[in-house]
Image (cartoon, rainbow, N blue to C red; front, side):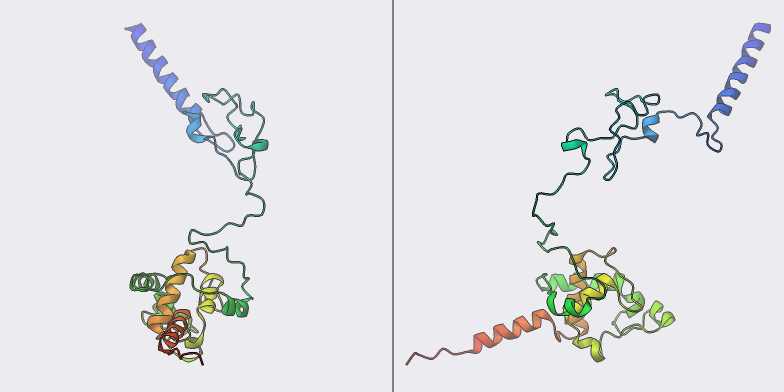
Length: 233
């Protein structure tokens, strides 16, 4: 009995010591189980550790290297990011170049930026959905600046009247991307493709196709179709 009691007390003491040892406090992180779950080997894009022994005391990696070694041995110079091919420029999946205009270059964007998304019923439907999702809190369901947030902050554009109807598609896209006045930039929240779909919806449905790139293209095509060729003299 005495031996059993002594073993029990010893077991309780050992358990207590174990619990105290695992406790984290201040700079002490406590005892870590499965350290690779805490210190996963990650390829950092801008920094790297080339010393294969760094964190060796903590490591249980299968390759035997230090826990903190994260240099990519498969890339030149141990880089974690591959350098782009010389002279190349990244493009989006639809072939568009990165948007280069600054927030203050709104006039240049208004003239030079054109909608690359083909207009059709599906695009308009998706544009309406995206408008309701991102734009209605301020602009309202009908784009008249009477959204719940718009009524509180005031000064929200009525997209269905005044000078706003005459804005180009490039102008609207630029404002969505970079922001203007009370409207903040949404370039980080809405993909370029979805921004253009919203532009299509605004121009076609809320503004009746006025000053829309597609409306101009349709008008030019209609003019060409109505022209009658005359025989040469």
